[in-house]
Image (cartoon, rainbow, N blue to C red; front, side, top):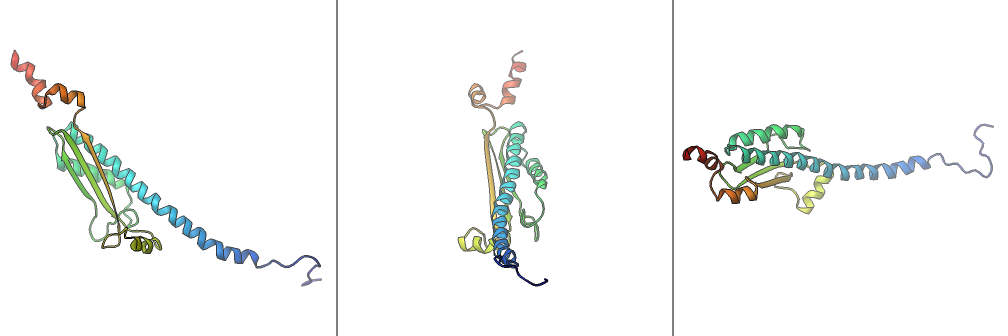
Length: 172
């Protein structure tokens, strides 16, 4: 007979719906909590890779900082221009500083940007004081490397490698 309940078996029609109503927001929040560190980690990896390659470029070149900055910004194109990866609205927030290289003993590259926190997490980041005055997280990577290996620097006695390389020509 339709609509009749068998004896000994209670009706559980709405139990799954109620469980989903409680469980889905928790799962959504967990995904958000895992996504933000993933985004920041991806940004830092790309920034660190670009900065280390720029240090190598400075060390092997004549220390052209403009070419170094252009190189780093080209490499940073791998990061999506979405505010949750890199704030691009209202002016690009990439800051690249290249120092040293050429005749200097060390080369140093600093890359900085801003990232907008994901929804719901922005309130927590604000309460914890992790954001700047514009409500964005600031990510900074600094890479510093010697221009020459220590054994090469010692053998040069502090002079520029080009001076040593051309010294044999002057002796003849």
